[in-house]
Amino acid sequence: MVGVSLRVRTYERSERLVVLVSCPACGYQFDRDERRHQHLGEHDPEDFGLNPLGEVDPDHDDPLFDDPVPEDYEQTVVVEPIRHDDASSFVDRLTSAGIEAGEIAVTDTAAVFGDHGAKRAITIGPRPHQEIPGLVERLTRSGVSSDSITVADAAEVSSDGE
Image (tube, rainbow, N blue to C red):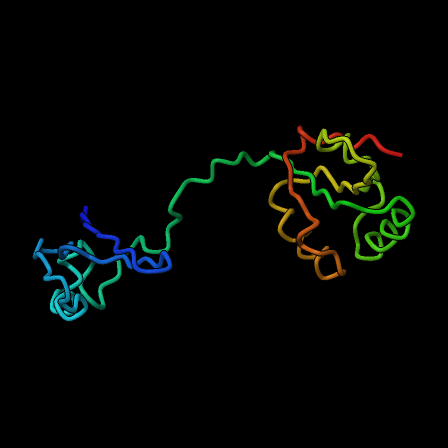
């Protein structure tokens, strides 16, 4: 593991500059105005615990973490807020984008998120979590703002609607 020592300089108008105090590879203490990149450039990648240049680990493309999500995990996509009078045209737009009408529900945001407003939301799902990125992409391509899309655990979303 490489240790790093930093110093923060604060100037007028609260401008901050973060400065490397010592070399993480060899521990060399830098002078106040010394150019760090010149010293660091003299090191080889191995000095920092990395592979030599041009050498690639056989496991370089392995996932960093095991997928902790079970295969049968389901999520629901929530699009909100929607004006009450726009809900049916919005549902039509979703079905024309290839989303099954049986998966779409118009609900009150209080039912979905527990807040107390008169807003409406559209819920789509539940669906297997592997399908959610493609669904979100289809929604954004059909003109839905990504800011209005929420992906939630299906068990936490009630889709009891009209």
